[in-house]
Image (tube, rainbow, N blue to C red; front, side, top):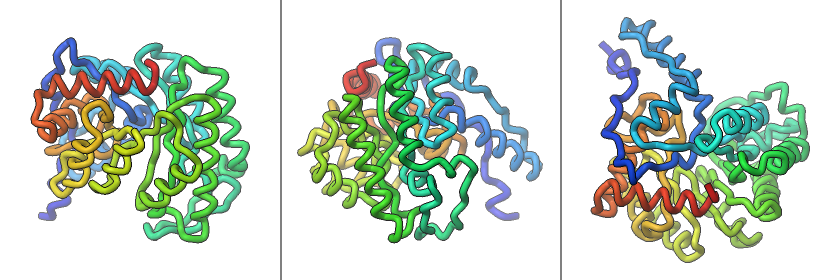
Length: 319
């Protein structure tokens, strides 16, 4: 029997709820994407004679999160059709869902069909909405942020991704990032950064253009040297389940370097589930597991770390 057959596709059990005075906000998640992701997990499970995996609605996922002390989420719309989805979710769940909007670095070069295949080896795949130019797509981000100032609390995720985009489109991606930096500053909003295989390029661009006052590295994946640079510039680091993965000492060291008042916690759901549930569907209710890993990093009680992330999240996003 292959190991593949035995992969557990079920939901992780609910964690121990956080104390009432230590409720937190998931700094970066894609709640609407959890639904099709879990549907695919269910399809694979049934195909392999495993027990079916329940598929929960957005409303159910938010209720599950609140039951363990995750009182709110910042839902990130970073593909053109998802911009409106994130805003609508915030309108439907006032005070619980907040929206962050941007055109993701991988998407930025697909708009106007300007993509170049990257080291990931995947073929370029254009959707009908990529006929919209990048300029027009970013204008939509701008418009939604102006029209929904209560709902839209950040510009993100933006940045660079040199795993999915080839050298030939690198400068296009950098320019798109610069346009988002300018927009975040113009609107006075914090910015969430995605920087896969591009730490150096992203830092250079931030330093050249001047970073927004509140700059957040989402699902932080840098080393200790980058942690030192972040600490020096007052940047914030948001930690996903990867802070619990065995080889990631640089991520943990960076948390200590920026300190308790510059860290936040996120799921990046449906991806990056914390240990020991890596590989299963992630959702906002999983946050307490990641907080437990961060508490180990700081050698502090989970509730204390939870309260620190909540203070920082509220300060950064004004929520």
